[in-house]
Image (cartoon, rainbow, N blue to C red; front, top):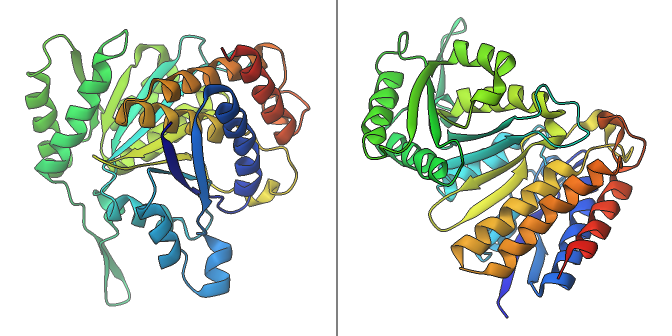
Length: 344
């Protein structure tokens, strides 16, 4: 039996609570699907920065480098020093964010099932900002053909495995004619290699409107870094909020999984945060491990996590932001119990 080493970063704010909840799920998954996960804590975030002056210590980087994958809770004010740095260090060029309607969640439309495939390593998030004197600031927007090609290919390959088989490229090439112009051209070139995939384009401002008006029409949304970040947060509200939205940062040989939301310090310690975002991030991690290492047990376990989450919601067991009254840990325990009932 293969053992997978998982670097675990609890994060800040509600991060430790979500981590505790997710560990309940991973424990029952290991017990019921004959999977061994060697979970190794790796500190990062605001509290570590306060203690050491470094948000992402070298000791944590060493643990991550030696791991098969990383699972991370939300980080607070030092997020750019943690997750943005990790994306660049490990060349995690694809940020994959599924947005899917689940039962008994306040959804805008029951048929929402889309996935954002967002370029993750450049654009304005590269952080190339400068001041000229006291009154002028400059931010460089970097868009390269290499990264446009990688993310476009990832988007079309993702669409190949989905029922709708549709890719929408989102850009603002009518204004940013050079940078988004390159992104647009590469998406069009890539589309020619996938004749069975329906391809269309949308300006980012139009996309924000259509996400509200007809979210069920979207399938795979391919876009640049900043647009993808903003649009996926907007889309999460359509399925019950950010607590329902998992995410993956994927490179060629390594991947990091995390909720797409922040650390929510205003509710930290209250045990009312929705654990589904991080639980489904762990589900995405098992999916990726199963595919990367050809391990059907991990794939079965990932399916069980989603089925158990759906069953728990159908049973009406939800945290306050979904209209229920159970705690973060109680909801996680209900999902864990449902996994046991589903396991072979």
